[in-house]
Image (cartoon, rainbow over the protein chains, first blue to last red):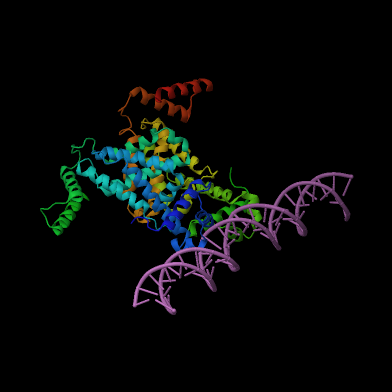
Length: 231
Length: 231
DNA sequence: GCCAGTTGTTATCGACGATACGGACCTGTG
DNA sequence: CACAGGTCCGTATCGTCGATAACAACTGGC
């Protein structure tokens, strides 16, 4: 899964540098090739396309994104991790605005999986929240809400960077979405207790599994729990 | 303010058509000129730049946006109008995905005022909500929150258009933000009543003004109210 | 040793954004 | 009517870009 071809990695990093320093958030294949001392056909053999190069840059951005997150998450309290995750997302957008737009802005032909992988990261944290009984929704739905709000806020901040100086707006949005997604107190059952219990068990199974049941039985049980929690 | 030059308008519409039908959300100045039967230098004299043309297309998209909104708002209940505004925004994004991205995605060199004007429209509706005592925040802050969430959700839907078929996600986001911005019931004072009253008076003055005070006095009063409502 | 696959080069193509230049057209003045 | 000034548009062209064809050098396995 890691990058093995050093030339490929060098071109990706050169493209990323050029993307960050270009005024119009664009890159030129020629300049990328010059920066690493090879000729154009090399790029097209490695990435197939300029789009392929951009996809690789976006996927590489995901590595940087996870590196930034791995340094701050997993404090034991999944809800606290969730808050830190939101702020880390905003910090990443501020530090790499062009790369951020490449990763999170829709491109019609993109084959990059960066956004999906960020979603998976978020779903993992949310599943831990659900296991603690702190989640009102299914992790998948909650993740879509949180990520959309996070991206929308970050893009607004990128358009007017002065907003980054005052985190009030970002925190307001964060609280608005989180209060709609999380239970006010971890052990409170302010909705249907059956549904809450089912969500919690589903998350626990997702995280740790169990030795008491066969894998097939677990799979069926999970589908039953989804039928309880979904409609 | 309206478009007077028919040639300019024709080029904008041609560019918009080409933008909507292009697979990569790009336009070619040559093709736009061919579509209206003129040559390239005409475009550069009218718009100065390709960026200028795109800015004009974005601003023209704002006209279409307001036309869609004027047909459905102003039902007397400003909160209902606010809900319809959110759904109308999503419908606009679904109907014109490429134009939507041009209008609401950050472009480093853009001089388009489309997003600011959409903000102004939203602030106007929110001011009516504040006048009805239904707003917990200043209209400006609430508008930033709502617009960012709306854009984030719309971009997510554009990236995966299947989401448009089920409005559940969009409505969940809408409720999350609105419940953070609006009072649960219009006459309820669930926060500092002084602050709420000040917000309400500020909005009323913003909307209708008064004959009882001189303009200078009103201006000073508004500044006092802002000092009350702000921290 | 040789052949196939890999890896890189040079040279080139077509499309694009942008511009220099010249000519047609209108307009007002004598 | 003739003519000068400005406005408006087309022709031709430049430099850059993404992409590819054709060819050359290296490598490993039988």
